[in-house]
Image: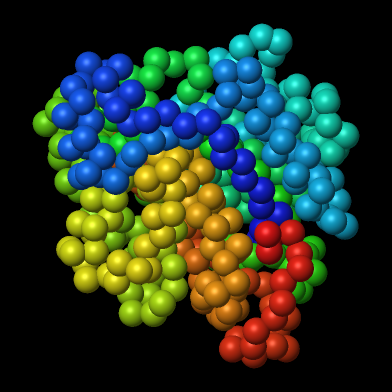
Length: 337
């Protein structure tokens, strides 16, 4: 399967960590300690005048502009990590299908709203399954969450993270249908659930503490499933839940810290559904990244969600089979910017 177009949108407004933590009943000193310990200073936020529909309208417009000669999507997958009913005048995905000719060929729509961070990688597996079954040829995926209808305090997970707003869109096609040097090849996908953490957001302080403490073990299992190379320079693009979790992971495993991308911190917070794909966009925009310089280098995307859900996948630059893996190519297709 090939990822032929990727677009992201991070709203410009910001909310300070102290403001969120104070709304949750915390003190200014608690906020300062949280910021220093976890590396989260603020979060991105949608403008009050804009809805989730407005955010996804941007995404669809950009996907259309980047899709080139790829046929219009016949399948739409909508992913969110925090299920909420949409406001009037109606659900977002049906409105997008009505309003955008780019989605006029969509004949099936799926919603993934598992209340955890890993749903977008589940969407990749769903798209691959549909393609293998001959039920889809071009899949559009839209993903992301806004918190405009929630209290500021609802963005705060004590001892863990602050949640920000961000959105992304993908176009996926069967590998055989994409030009040889276009986009990223989606490789291995790992999907796992750890039932002992099924309490999700509703766990007691002790239960949540055990879940946070198991983060490194859960990540390591997912990386083993993917065949992750612990000794190379390939990048790991994880959910940016907080800086401490990944510092601890590097200490536990010996993984070099410069392989882990934490570019969303401290500026925009944990945009849980889309974190790895925001980082993928950053990686692709860096001409000196290993992903761009060496087509054989995979990027590993990974997320661990509430309830014990964990998911990961690997992606590589697509190159014609006649080219050596050590050759360098300029990239002008939709994923290069």
